Image 1 (cartoon, one colour):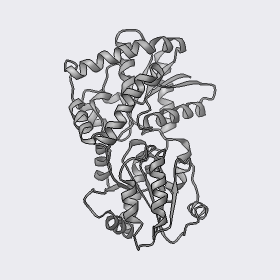
Image 2 (cartoon, rainbow, N blue to C red):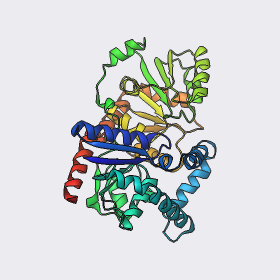
Image 3 (spheres, one colour):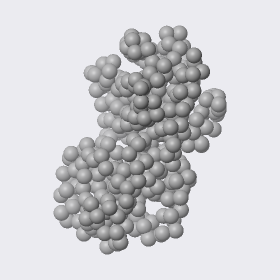
Image 4 (cartoon, rainbow, N blue to C red):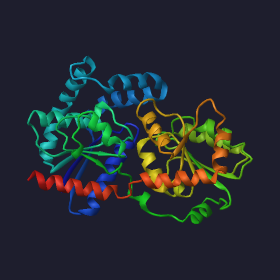
Length: 376
């Protein structure tokens, strides 16, 4: 199989999903040639800094404005000014990347972000390409930017989205509820007792994991500060991701903590820490949710980005997989009450298992193979 996977590095989740698909293809068909491109950065690194840097700043500094823009673009028609500009921009970008695509000559193209998805859709519309195109939506709710003609298959995270996409004009037969692909490491089982021992933690206390995605965004330090005064039988793992300022601040807070705590920056052991935890406190990013579901770890959610993460949160609350930590509530009491409610925690774990997609990688590989066969 010769596969081209197009992504964008905004937030980390889109690109991590792309890398996971790369690994699954090579696992099931080792002689494959797979190319993963961070699309906008590949076309123009300066433009990537402007677009992706601008997105990250908007999400961090003005989330309410970002949320309004998300809502505004949800049902845009092609004749709308903003959509028309977006189409022209993506068409220009599409023709910049076209020579590289033709040179690689892939059997199939997979997009884990809507920017390259629209680019490839435009190229197919203009008969520049006829390669099968697969869209992997990396959230738990849909948005109009993901909807394009010339997409041969949509891979979604949950069955609710099948109805959502169909209502927006997508043929139901093109939608596959396979899940968001995560790193295969999350499928490896780790002994809880061994991980706790490694952390020098007690097996008789509830373990709480706090993280905010690869960027370490949201109210992590505030939540940890509150929980660090808890008199409940808990112990805490906090992961700051690539946020060095947050990491150093957490180390200072730990000095005054009444609760046994381990603080990490970037770590490749997230899967182990999720599996040994009784509760994950996090922002509701699509990839993080998928990882937690596979690890059967109930969630408490904070600081959702207005738009896609709010939709992710709504999905989890609807299916009793998570609770929401409202900014105005005493989160320490809410978390302590949940950890004391064994029945509710077990119910949430069961629901995690219900919506987990451990076979996602294999299912996606089979779909790609079938699309390639049918194209010849």
